[in-house]
Length: 479
Image 1 (cartoon, one colour):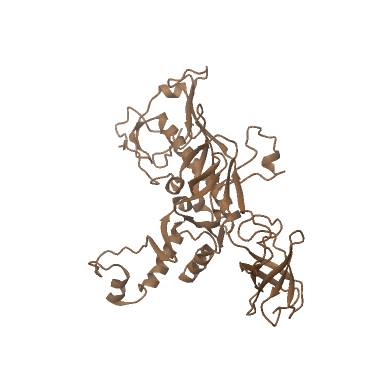
Image 2 (cartoon, rainbow, N blue to C red):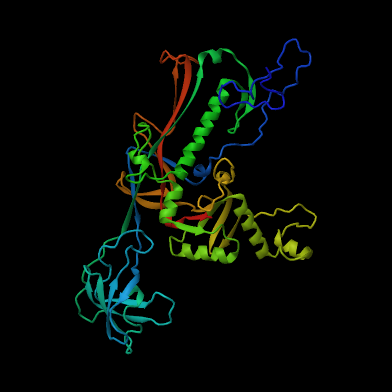
């Protein structure tokens, strides 16, 4: 019965007899037994893909099914979809605000944040050299219209029905006049997320535990030693820890009426989902479509986008291998590496004891272009069993720009302002229950005495969600 050979033996992740994990020639009478290595060879190196959230965020407890916070809105008023209702050369023009969203915030417009006496600048939204400045003399918040008296003697500089951009830049009143009519409420954007429950389990029956076979292993977290059935348990634990992170990256909320929200086939399955990092950045952040930036002009476009947002000084680029090499290549071009001769190479790579014959470091850890950008390889995007194996333009993510540091938000639970990392995890916890990372053993084997099941079952559980604060400062690179 030749179920397996020495050349194609494949250990299985579970204790199931297969054709590839059965040794056919293990015979005590055979004097030509094969030499074996006690230590397991790390064929794929460090197989874990987690570490991203540990690098950029923190974990904090929460005691609610819903995590809510508010983020600051814009301080100044600007509308980009305003229709001119008066003819060219009019001394007083009427304008209607048609913006469906407050620019760059995602908040809906309730009335308009323009008041009589304010000075405004109006210019066609399309490329144009004309501009008007004037004073708001009438406002109808319900109809979202306002009238402007122009400073220019030539009156309105553009035709009726022109789509304009309006920017408030100040106000002007006569001596002894009454004060400003009306006031503006601070604009807040309210965000929330819901934690999801993540589970896993490893099981081994009591009979298999009685037949001990030892293997020396080195695991991803640095542990070494001889293990048998606990090896698979340990790999289950590592896999679960990876899923704690990847679930926070990939989670999406279940739409109303979706299959997840309405299915009855498996009633233990979750029904709500959660807002993962990629979902939040795609919805409220900046998306670079078309691969990755390959030159300084592309990064100038990114800098211009960041200028319109929070202008965070330091940012980290978590990238896959191709994106990392693309950054190295264009930075090398900028520094003169593309030139020829010793002078070009010396100028490119170092000032201290540089030499043409020394081993060169052809990579860059960061650069400054308006803001500081630091570069870090992201294993999750390279691993072929995870995001690295996805090649379609709709699914491929090449990297993400994450602002460094923390920001101040109003915490709905604490009832006060609190400093929080831009990216952090909230897990369910109370004085009696901590669901950050739970593990327990059931059954009647392996020291457990909780049931009559002739096995040992190791259970894993966590309940958590990720909070992306200021998603407008993030950039995801797709395509």
